[in-house]
Image 1 (cartoon, rainbow, N blue to C red):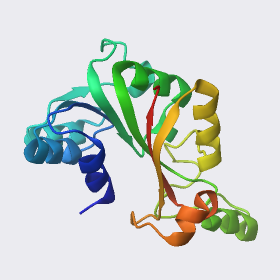
Image 2: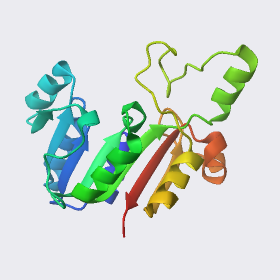
Image 3: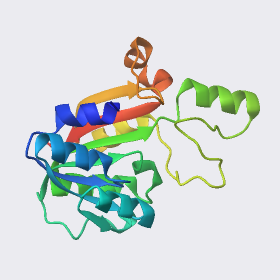
Image 4: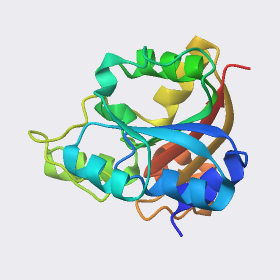
Length: 197
């Protein structure tokens, strides 16, 4: 089972109200609905992915996340989930505020640009890295705001956001001792659970 599914099982209460930003084909919401009675909505911009999510029976709204979450009231959800999409929005700091306005907690994942392989790739090749976690070339990447564990920790501290959980995993979503000890260097993907409490 994918690590994000396992973590969602641990971090999302049964019966919770969940908003999944960039929900893709709806796999996560369908899993939480079917196994934990979660009620939720997905937001997605890609028409093919929306069709797949609808096929799974997921409530999905076609929307560009760069427009924010203004169509949702404060506290509409218990948890907002955003996997591998924060780095692709125009104003990730503003969207983070919006996420914690509409929900008590947020679960966020993003590729860590400070991973040792990215550093070596740039150092040896003199080019932007391409990897499992960063699969695009510089000219066709949707990633416009690459960051690191330290960058995200600093953003949370500046906004008074409490980090409840933080994991560092590789591209295959496997953790390691080194990734736990030195997440900024050995964590390929960052997984956070945050709140304003």
